[in-house]
Length: 363
Image (cartoon, rainbow, N blue to C red; front, top):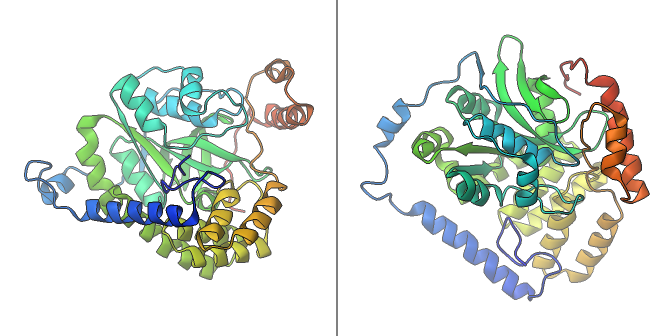
């Protein structure tokens, strides 16, 4: 089994440490070589011509999209269907769930399956990277690209959550999220948005038409290529960890170093982050920290760390958002009691608060 980020054998999969190192090195070298290749003469217009078509971010902008209330733990596929609606494509979140998450209700949604699915079903493409910025999101929205991002759901839970970002307003200082748990135009203050995006490496995803690819490439610049994106984020994550000195910043630095192949640096950052706070809910830590140790030949430590992290909660499920608590009970059915209790608690809190969404302020 391959790691979806690095293309190396996933933790626990067969294969020696030497094979893992070779696979990782080959993947990084291949990506570097690809990024360094000159573009074919007919592949794209001159850079200046491409950049002329990029509109600078306006003071406010909004993209029309349909809102979807998510089904059980289905924030990712629901957000994908909202992005598709902004392109005039109607898709079922249930079809998206099977394609992007599979049938296991406990499984979250990564980004790897989105491009193959939207390409095969709708002739579209998806682009995802870490290291997003508020300025980038504003430019994307101004130019007609609706992004979705991974953040904490809110200040009351440790729930990782996908939400679509449909617009923003500089005068109000907010992004507007089409949130599958909270509503169609939820205002999120700029500070809150950034604080709750950082623990997930500022991950974003956009879906686009093939004819808009050159415009998208002009907007994102060199991070269109994977390796420059990884090393740009490593520099940013290190700077944020040293300046903010929070456990979330250090854990994000650990993940950035791991993805860049700096395994000693990664282990040190993960250790600092865990010493300062909790890794609960930050799903990458449970795999990347032990994997970095294994890639350094520290197998015994890796097993011990994996055991400790396995006993801590991963991100709780983001439940569905129906109008009646009995619909949650029907969805839960005969699933494990502990899972049902968590879902019901989350649902009850949101049924009480979702009628009037208020801006979420910085913590």
